[in-house]
Image (tube, rainbow, N blue to C red):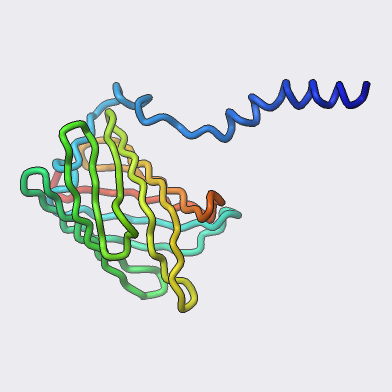
Length: 180
């Protein structure tokens, strides 16, 4: 009898537990305004301020980024210059391609394979594997970036970093376009 109650309780609560693990759907943002046009937003100079938080929520790194962005038709280049709170610097140059169906693909020197993303309404989901230097070695981590256009100048970005499906931490960024 006790086993049966436990099974019934587990069956009743499992949909609730699973719904907490479900990820958001990009199409749910399709009607959100303003509509995000990556080539328009990432054109010119964009400043960003961000943090990396570990699994426990502790801020491990703070950083700023100055992005020099330009597009030629469906081809875009986002040249990112990072400055971390400890004084170290890093550079990443994204090469993006816009496809007709709202999809984007991209590459950078420290990205393993090809990044893939899609826009719907004011949101952009961007997924890729990053070759991340850690303690003298390089590990491959997966990033699931979600960007949300707030207005013509400001966009917020929240990314989850994971390895083998285990969440390692989160990156939060605020982008601001200059002169918009």
